[in-house]
Length: 108
Image 1 (cartoon, rainbow, N blue to C red):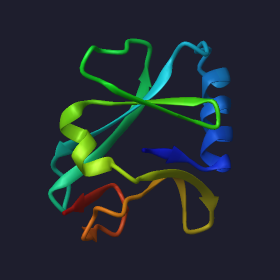
Image 2 (cartoon, rainbow, N blue to C red; image 1 turned 135 degrees about the vertical axis):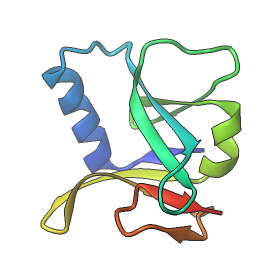
Image 3 (tube, helix red, strand yellow; image 1 turned 45 degrees about the horizontal axis):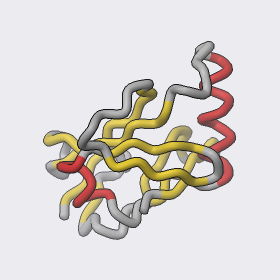
Image 4 (cartoon, helix red, strand yellow; image 1 turned 30 degrees about the vertical axis):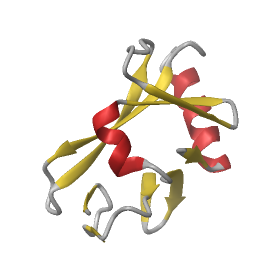
């Protein structure tokens, strides 16, 4: 399961409105090679649900994850911070053994 906090949900809904996206556009979360820790998170809107996707829904937000990324993301919570120490989406990933200072890359 992948979940979202209330703050993340509110920001996703706000972004949909700001970018004139419909409710049919879901959140796609994936993992790609790169970054200073070896793996990077990728987050965006996607209207297409592919046959191999795993679909999770939390707080009315559908989250799409490809099979390859799922192993790295199970149990992850997507959060949003708008505090002084940084603004943006954050991944609380229990599978990550190490993360970089910016929080955008990790290793297992």
